[in-house]
Amino acid sequence: MLDDASGRRDARGRPEALLAGFALLVALTLALIVLGALVRAHGAGLACPDWPRCFGEWVPVMDLEIAFEWSHRALAGGVTLLFGTLGLTLWRRTLPGDRLRRALLLATALLAVQILLGALTVWKLLASWTVTSHLLTGSSIAVCLLWIALELRDRARAVPAPPAPSPLARRWLAGVLALLVVQIALGGLVSSRYAGLACPAWPTCNGGLWFPTWAGPVGLHLLHRTNGYLLLAALLAWAALARGPGRLASLARAAAALGAAQVVVGVANVLTGIPVEVTALHSALAAALVLTAAAAAREAWGRPRLC
Image (cartoon, one colour):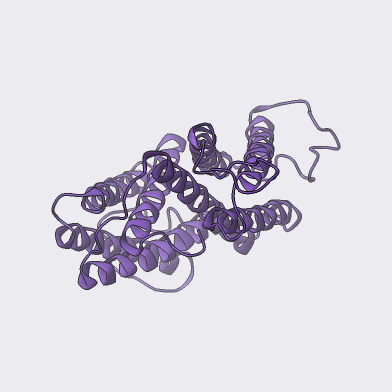
């Protein structure tokens, strides 16, 4: 389809290459989130004490910690350049008012905020609010890129709109999404405030007590645990409500499985003393759960207006 006399194509005309590009962007963004967790787990967040350079150099002398932090920045730069290239191409192939253009504007704004937060994380010496905001914004970027990829896929395959789920299933999904946002934020705070081993035992916390205090790092850790249990219960209930054929039911089952795996890995993370490998898996599962829930939200509410 041509949009005007200039001969530019609508995204519905040839979306396959753009779909592959945005799918790659989603994968790279997930890798960036996991790499960020590895940077944190290795204590390398300030291995490069300045920004955007590292010790005043674009390519510094490397040791293990500097390599982790520098590679995180390099991958972020590559994601930014790829998004700029794909975004400009998609913008030129879409009509004014297209939801894909709104998605691109939102993703661009989020990316600008994320770059600023990346700088502030270094300048503010890993302040917990910068680390947590960086994680939440990165997850939001991944969600928006996923919605763009799914929209391109649906246009390429002429996928019809899914049937509306029951109001009860939608309400449960809304609750799942709210608990998931809280859980990601709590996870960022637990990491940035070094509360991962504030409760070194499981299922109790300290000295055989389940809830010794709700103050300080222990309280933060307990909030993360408690909300995680609530999230898993909500995921299981939502999967039961959404059972049956169709993509939404499949996404609900996948989300419940990811939630269960996340709880198991979280317990293992505590019992094994937060090893780097388990921490990376915990972050990867969390990112996968976010994207699965986001895809389900798109199915349940029929392509959100923003994206």
